[in-house]
Length: 403
Image 1 (tube, one colour):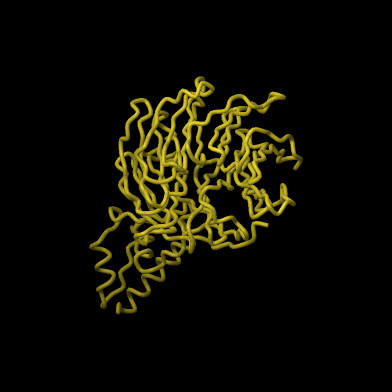
Image 2 (cartoon, rainbow, N blue to C red):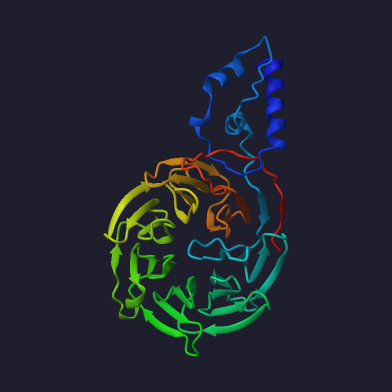
């Protein structure tokens, strides 16, 4: 046991941490920030109080982490009752107007991240139907909602009115993605449809190259390429101008399970990250220009979501089932080395979805434990070219209902 002097020092450090340093909400420890000699002195000295006013924020908080205070991680927790525990659905999205859309059972809610208020946008009365995918348009005013019954609807988030229904699928619409005024949807009927929402006849083109359900879709930031992932473990890369001819640019067959998680790199437009399901558990980085896999990392768990840090070269992964015990975690990886910066077992059940705030500082994870957890894991942009992963602030543990 350490002496009273060291205990007093810890108390001072805790008070300092709680009362100040509110710039972020990092949960990833970094040993390079630690003064191990200073730590050893604190833990072994019995004769005098050691108080060093030059302790860095990161050093103090890292010591708290290793002493077991690492439970202070979320900046907010919301209850999400009746969220569907289904890997193939994509029922959460954070729009450009800072509103989070989340489907809970047959209801779809909009939660305003600035005010903390939530409102029900829609409710499905048919017990055999419920939302299976959600995607905000780029201006954050309209939200696309796919359904188990194969419906695809477009809703006005300001007037709370249904704008129109889009036809073309004959099974559940598990994924949707916007590219300007083009809404792309993927279905268990194995097809991908581009809808031009400006046209009376919205069906712009339909392709069916996947042999099983389409569970991942992501347009590149430039809008000229689309990545699609399927339950048959394949990824296809499409050029926007050639989709109608079913002429894909690349087929990637490196995964051994369904590919739901897809994310284009925000600072290298030809780089795509993908994650495989339970029997695969790998994150792969692809060079689209060359058509090659440039890195592959075994995460040892089902990968349900991937989010790039827009400010620094990092990528966050959310995980589900695992044969090795590494389940229900969030993991942060350094790019391009894909070395793991840290991990956190945050949910009591698998992480189903990840989404990122408009400013790129916060990521929300939705778990099968019926909670939404908000993490200031990426932090604000910095002018310094170096990257520090620290625990910048202690968290508030606010918990409330999403509805």
